[in-house]
Length: 291
Ligand code: SD4
Image (cartoon, rainbow, N blue to C red; front, side, top):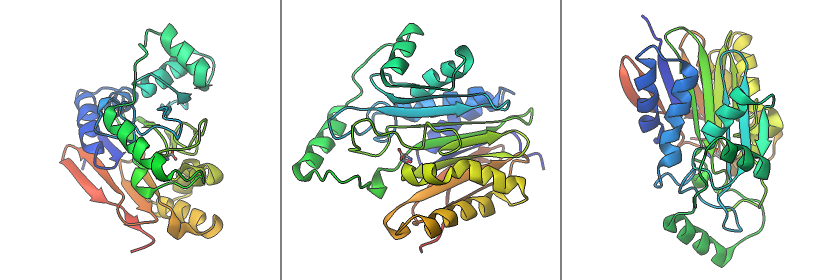
C-alpha cells in the first residue's frame, strides 16, 4: 500500500491544519511547504487559544509566541518570545531560508519579521484577555502549568517524494512567566526531523521535553529500530521515570517514520492527534501511561 503522502498533527485543531497541508501534498508539493501552510490555520484562528492569534497571554498580559520548522536536509529555523506577529511559523521559515542562523528571539525576531514585511498586530483577543483577567484573580506565581492549556500544534509530513518535514507553533503555557520559552521552538525538544529515519513533535509541559531533548530522543529510538509508538512510549517513560511526579503533568509525543508509519504516546489520557492520507482524515487517541 502506498502510504505517502501523509500528514499528522497534534490535537483536534490538527484536522483543519492537516486539510490545508493535504492540499499541498496531494499536488506533489513539498512537505516543508505543507507543514508551514498547515499550522498557519490554527495560528490565525482566534478560537484556538493556545497558538498564534487569540493565544493565552503570559501573566503580564502579553501574547508571546514560539515556533520552529525543520526540513528534509536538516535545515531549521526558529523564533521564540516573538510578539505582535500572527504567523511565527512563517518567520521561523524565513530564519531558515534567509539567515545564517537557526534561532531569533524577542525584539530581534520582531525586527527581522518586520524587515520581511510582516505586520505588527494586537494578538490578544477579548476572549483571551478575559481568561487572563480571570486568572489574575487568584494568580499564583508558581510556574505551574494546567494540562488543559497545552494545545500546541506540532505537524509532521511525508511528501510524495518521500521527504519528511515538521513544524511546531504555540503561545506556550498559559499565564507563563514573562520571557519563558518552552520546548516548541527548540530543535530536538519540541520538534526533530531526520530524513533518513523519521520525525517527531511534542505537546505538553515543555520544560520536560527540554530536559530530555525529547523529540531527538524519539527519532534516535526509531533509528535503533523502534516503531513510532514504541519510541514515543520510551520518551514518555524516560520523563516519567526521571522527572518527578509525572502524574501532575501532561506530555505527548507524536512521530512519523520514513515509511509513513505513525504513532503517539502520552502520560495522561486525553491527548489526540489528526492523521490525513489518501484514506481520509481521522482523529485518534494517543495511548497513555495513566488510564
Ligand atoms: C510549551 N509545549 O510551551 C508547549 C505547550 C504545549 O500543547 O504543548 N501545548 O510548553
